[in-house]
Image 1 (tube, rainbow, N blue to C red):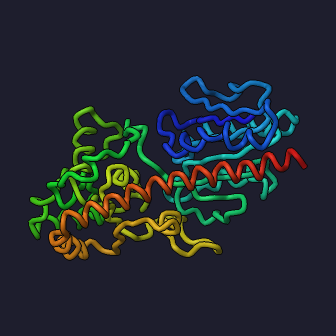
Image 2 (spheres, rainbow, N blue to C red; image 1 turned 135 degrees about the vertical axis):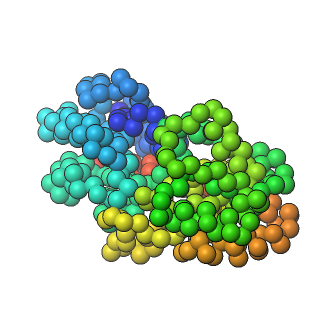
Image 3 (spheres, rainbow, N blue to C red; image 1 turned 180 degrees about the vertical axis):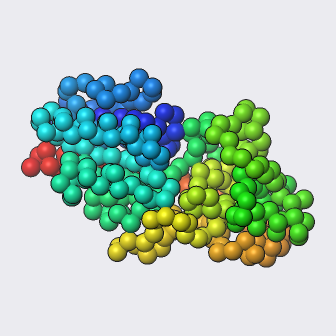
Length: 339
């Protein structure tokens, strides 16, 4: 039996994990016997010891973003380690919402390549550990923990004219590039042509009104401005894709341990770049006025084609990652079982 457990995320499991797990019963079990099946469990009742004794392959979805979450994730890993050592579990993989500074050293001891038991690690953000052998990059996805929905493309999403050149709804920190962005928008009067709503303090939860405003802004804007936060990768990038609004991404490395590896040299956002994301990447927000002036000259039909391309790319992106995820698990877990 294959089991995927969302532990420590509460409700902020990236959508793509759910999307990938849905395919396990088709892709993995077709390569095994008829008694093989998959299961996915989540919720506040999920604590170490929750899953049943007939499980022999487990994927843990863990949150390692902050100290309290790391402690909880470690309890799960120690429990799984005990089951592996007592031969009650055969294989363990982990999907990890890593630290935004890529400071994930606590996890290293559990990797099989370091003498531990975790055979595969799918990690969010541009970790220098990524080697595409046993450590793989996984995208952040949308903020389901803030009730961002699964969005289905519609005719109006593609063809309706959008009244705003761009949007940015978010927190503006002092002395940050976000503050520089706000200054540029105000100086050139683009704040009148874009949907801008800035706040000084981050709010972990959305109200129904704020969530609707945010979705409306994405739906009614041609571009979504995506300034770097603690990390370059943010939920806003994927949420903009969901509504066919082209992300304008601040392509700069943030402080911390994130960066290139011996195999990859396109950080930040290596995964998105390697899969041909049709975004606008900029190094400095001083480039924005030129982008917005050009945007004014683009005809509606060209924008429609661009939206189609973005929505198609995003669907392909999710499908490819689903296939990659299940293929890696299949080749690592099932082939080892057969051997």
